Image 1 (cartoon, rainbow, N blue to C red):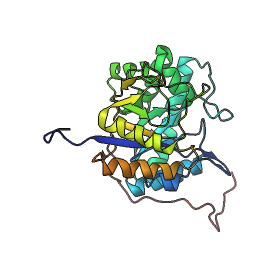
Image 2 (image 1 turned 90 degrees about the vertical axis):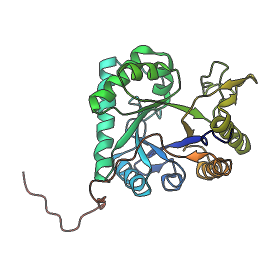
Image 3 (image 1 turned 45 degrees about the vertical axis):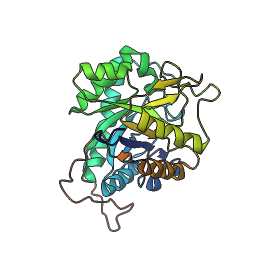
Image 4 (image 1 turned 180 degrees about the vertical axis):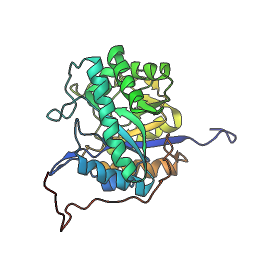
Length: 282
């Protein structure tokens, strides 16, 4: 990097709110001290209303941008099973999920700042033009020109750009890449990288050099404004803190790609129970 070149700039995002009822998968509190953008599950692959509210309140309190992580309707499969959903139905379900999260974001004094598909939907929209177009139609129906976080060069990004929505490239330091720049499917050996040293090394290479080593050993270019830290990885918070510290030490600036809207009112919390509440007879 030359003296006149600006310092590298990167966003750290993680999938949060991935719990349901008493079951909790992600350490939301710890990860919200690491990331600059939070992909909040909207109830279709994980998440429930109380979890969505709590994560939005914590994110708004810490200045972390809230993003809607939309999915196929697949709680049992955590959104990672291939599904066939008609495009008009999928568009409606995307709008529904964004709208639900927006209510909780506004209640916390913030707004939904971007959209990212999850799991099988994310991977499907890399190549499937029809499904990608349905996701973008759902985002547009939700209102606003929300940025779309996804794999660079994907059908999703092509559809978003055609619709006038901002696109944001994403990379994964803990996932293996093919020589074509796509993610190695999770069902294949070596798809997920568990060695913390290797994850940190890859994160630095992606942020500073815009390259990564593919699964066949070749160095390939990576154009990404955001790095994803998987919240469901064992020890995710500790690994995230290390990645953030190493990036900062290397002169990489950490900032979300989206702007966190200023709160229009003081955030409020909803108690789990309200003593003395009287329900009127209907």
